[in-house]
Amino acid sequence: MKIKSFGLALLLLLGACDKGPAPQESFAGLGSDAAGFAQVVPGKVFSFPEDHGPHPGFRIEWWYVTANLKDAQGNVFGVQWTLFRNALKAGPTQAGWHDSTVWLGHAAVTSATQHFAAERLARGGVGQAGAQAVPFNAWIDDWNFATQPGAASPLAAMQLKASGAQFAYDLQLTSSRPLVLQGDNGYSRKSDQGQASYYYSQPFFTAQGRLQIDGKTYQVSGPAWLDREWSSQPLSASQSGWDWFSLHLDRGEHVMLFRVRQTDGSAYLTGTWIDAQGQTHTLHNADIQLAPLHTTTIDGRQIPTRWSLKIPGKQLEITTEALNPKAWMNLGIPYWEGPVRFDGGVGYLEMTGY
Image 1: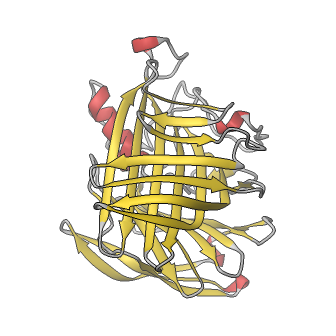
Image 2: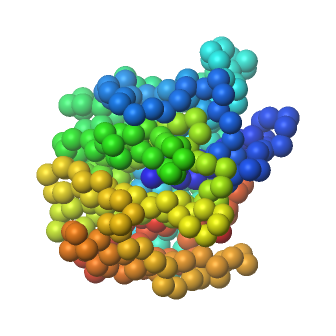
């Protein structure tokens, strides 16, 4: 979906930068009232490259990249990079330190035995963090996701960089394939009450470059995925967390799906089937059979790290396994996120609210 860890980011940002307490009526306050902010409505006509850049009328927004990587020796890794934009109040953005925008970055590297994550926090208006459409660049400090000089289009050739105390990566991402609009032509519903985001993806990236983890350097390559979302109130007050999958199938298709959990035990489940040519088919609750099979105890929580996924209409029946079940993002607000593998492909999984 990629409501993603922005819920986590929002709670952290509000706690760090606002005088009042973070809203408690929904997960991370993402169901709180959005009066004064722009609203997500059906029928938006996306415009590129403009929509690669920020949307300051909306309260929340993110640029999110994951990559499933491997080196020549067969070592397997996952990489994650996210930049979040959060408007602390509605209204025009002001200059300098009067800017009410807050930015948060998350980055992580995962192997079968190790997982390292880091975060960066910045106020807007002073150049420390931001995003722009042309030439495309999203950055916080020295972490950045930017179009390489001479690229044929803004997302055709990208550089992705981040580092932490025990990891670093510098990757080149390329794709000549079209973008994918999620949901109903980019209008992605998150609940039966009508909460939604604008959402598009680039699931066809190929990544290659250098990765360092715990003092060792690897030359790696593999598939990567970009998600872009913005909204002002993407959850209902009764939604407690989510499970989000992005999957690269060896046979050429891609799958995005998410389950937003309700406090009463029910869930909102939807997704997108992307064929090898980039054509999409929306998946509804009745099309998807998703169930946790095994949990891992982390920090006193039971986290489902092995899942059964069936999409009978697409002849897909798989069991996803976490590359590293301990891929716990132990940041300002913790959550689970890491690479998964299955017979016939690889992907990424994020789980919040456990």
